[in-house]
Image 1 (cartoon, helix red, strand yellow):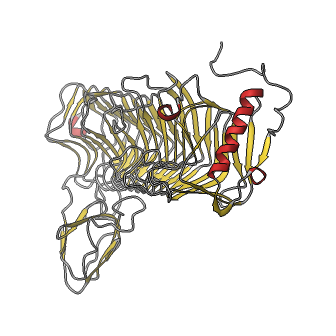
Image 2: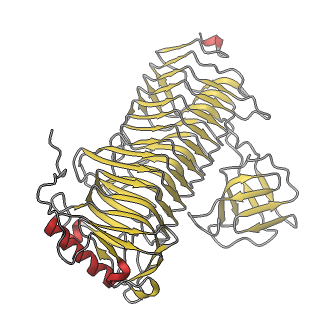
Length: 559
């Protein structure tokens, strides 16, 4: 079988072009690394020289930047195929981006795009490695958000490697590269990126990968990376062409996403594999599938497995828009501020009935509301062999407090008169006049608040309230079940789940709840253990129709 873009050694000269060495010390070719001199012109000239040499002899070149601070100002460098950039390690080799002389220029370290440079399948970059350095984007400022204000912004890359990079505080996405084929992203830390993104712009992520440029398969591995406090997603995969093929071949393994808006987001892949990752403390969801991307296309056929999804402010796993299938298997989904798993209706084009959603072998515990919440129709779902225990922890009563016992900081509320049950208010919205904030956790006397945006210094929608101001906390929902069906569920299999609460106080009120808005038609609800919930094994505001409801321990009256 012949694979495109996999060249042989034919046409490669045994000796490099005269005057263009294979390994170049940047200090010997015009870069100073003194933190003061603008090294961008010298870098651009060297990249062009080595790119021309690669075009002439087919031998890839490497630019080595020894320890130093390399100031890159007022223009990005258009990258060339066959040219790599390597440093002495993050902290030792630093590229500091800025645009004080040209506020209109987004000034990425390196970029190569279809719109600006004619990048496409036939004019792609190849044999480019970016490794062992730091990119500081905090010096880039513009009147308006520009999605090109990245650390690295390359399109159509073949056999590229991004390894051991630290990219932080860029105005837009940190590592924002599209259409990667046979590429590796390994050990990249992205932090505080997207700082000019108000939450509604394109990009603004730690790692953002546009997909769909190579057809049905794009072979990309993202491994051992960390994404912390980025404005939108820690990592997202986004289909770039409306109606285009959703590519297979993308894997995310062993990564960590913390404190972002979304941990990892699938906005249009086919069969995205996310495995052995830690998704914690994100402000919306740990893992999200939706049509939020530029082409309004949700992912499908993906697999989320063997992950720890803990302490996210709203949902652990949020699935919306996708027609399915999707598989959530073997994860720990715990301590999230709303639902462990949430099948959501998010609006947009793909709002039909989802099919073949699999939720299997997961460990759900300590989530604030329902462990599994179905708010969008599903057909042929499989919810099997999960352990669902001690959820519904948001059980604290409504509270109104004020006076000399109450004080506020940018991220907390303290009321010395209270004796709150730990984390019994997690996920609630607290209001002080017109100001609001969301509770991330609580102990007996203090509410710890989530920042209003990733990497934010305050949790409040306005100024910090003055001491003694009156606060209001709402009451919790009265029913907080292990599995809640609040939409049409058809031909589903719910089998072999253990759903209970043995903690004190027990807060998971029911094992299974079918609301008055939900339905269970032709479903097989069998062999579940529903004994030991706070109020009852089941609550059926809408009785099931057809199928089989049998052999469910604790619910013996129903068969």
